[in-house]
Length: 251
Image 1 (cartoon, rainbow, N blue to C red):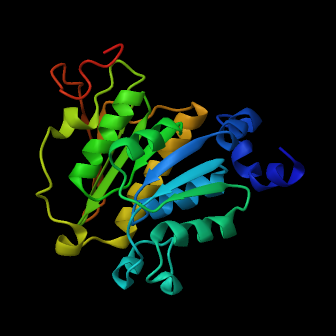
Image 2: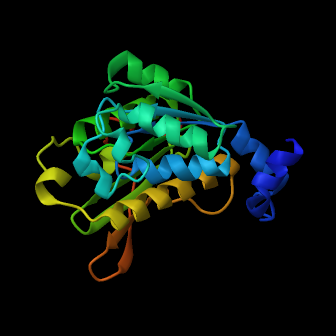
């Protein structure tokens, strides 16, 4: 790290949980962010600001005017632009030392496997069950930690699934093998600060995992009730019969 980097990251380097060694880990890390919407926006901004070296941005969609109420990485001039390009431009302006790789596609199959294989950690910021299941399966197969968040209406959820930990459940242990039947934000609505809160917490969990401090939300599901400003936690156990993770090494 040069003097400019030491100055840029000085406030978090002061934390004994991070220090210079932890900052160097962040600079050397790469993460995949699946979805550059309401959740992915704060995730990408905070990880870039923190100095995570490489951010792989995956989203096939374009910026729409209705996105701007909550997807704070984009702006009015971004409407009609690919979200990955809009996000990359904002991240470059925020921290030019961070490398952004754009994947303007709905990741699936071999493309998803390759993307997951080439990073240290994955953040699921998508908005549909099919993508979440596919991302989870890839992370289990490749032993990559997954930080998963969701928000709709005035309710949010957050958990960490870490296949490197033999006690950790996976996403499918918690939610089963269902299908996309829940309402989307375009149908049910969502409040902007709520997705900002969930995304910020996802970024926090990612930093903890990358540096190696604190206690991540492995085996725990954080439930957020924005209407009454309440947080509660549920314990989640690994399903020994899970068709996704039961046969993973160490399980």
